[in-house]
Length: 138
Image 1: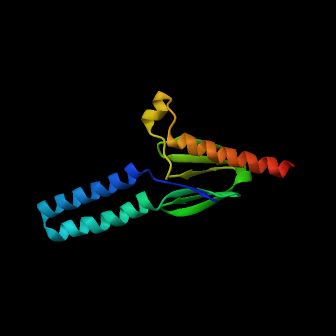
Image 2: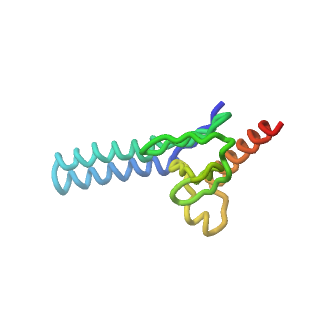
């Protein structure tokens, strides 16, 4: 059964609340057309940047769905992971890295050394990659 991680509820619904507030502000200051335009554009952006991104861990791959595309990394190609403000970085043995926007490590957690959701997801990805590498070695 695949494991799926998305943007945190605070990130998703905080973004949604921000768009609604901006639409109300635009409505009150510039009129109903501006308010409606901000709402429509804002909701589209929130959907694509806060509700669409996901990291899915299957039995064979890590599937990273970001706003501009989807990347699939075979677990056997995972060399390491690391959480950062920009997202969870998945380093590949074949070179390069893929960043998952859905799982971010807050700077405060990084600076204080606290464990975050990004650290837990990174550990799950590395554990799955380790199991796949052990299976291939057998």
